[in-house]
Image (cartoon, rainbow, N blue to C red):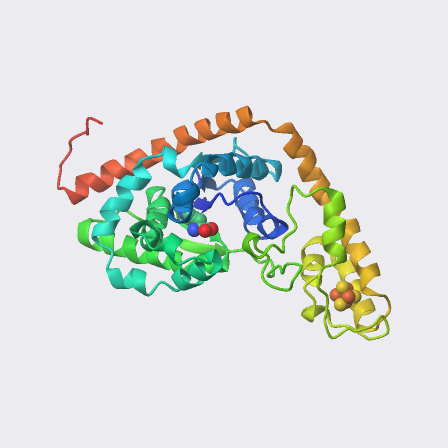
Length: 337
Ligand code: TRP
Ligand code: SF4
């Protein structure tokens, strides 16, 4: 194995079907890293889902398999990467427990994603539990268990990666050098806005899903928010103020995108013409994914998850052995687990 290969770990909560924002941000870097030959672990964060969905937990498994079939349809490869469910590798819970002992409460209290999350979930009560408070510690365990150097994530996750670094550093200092310090890898894609001009998100009901039928996608695009200052066909517009243009940025080829910008700024065409160009570029890409989706069955996904579980477990159990030997001062003895 050459040493310029990273160990990569990332994950997603199984919140149901994926939208084009997921496709063009995180999934594209996952695929790139995997195709460049780095060692990749991609997990379904079903325990993390439980921190907020404990009152409706039966849907988590179904959502997980659905999400994995979409990962596979976009090209995340079970041959190249380990694709697995967090809850099926108990070492995550074990490392979480140990890391919990060296996690200062202040580190979690200061976590900026906490408040945002409460807002997005829209219910204080749902997240008033220890599991949710310690969410970043479990995420740190996910990352450190695989001694990951790189963690491809969206911007919103950066505070969590920083917590993982802090905990890795502290563990290494107290118990001995085990963990490399993980670094976030950000997608270079611009932020994708939803049909109402807010960040594209399931909870805002403003997203275009990979599994939407094409008619529905056309309808969604028809009512998509555009530059609100462009009141009539004769007014020039400004693409940088236009939520729909964030889709052109990721779906329309460079040359044509330049043309779209020019036509918008000079009132050379109307928003409807502009939307037609977007559809022409976006729809075939989504159709291709949908063709792939049709080829995956529930059984296939379950087999893939089982293969992934084995690969992940093999690595994770070695890390846990190393960790426990250091923490509890056990020398040169193989555990009997
Ligand atoms: N918290 C991440 C999210 O909501 C999901 C996640 C869980 C994750 N464990 C991880 C991401 C480890 C990166 C690394 O999207
Ligand atoms: Fe947006 Fe296109 Fe209309 Fe310009 S022409 S405001 S980029 S939809």
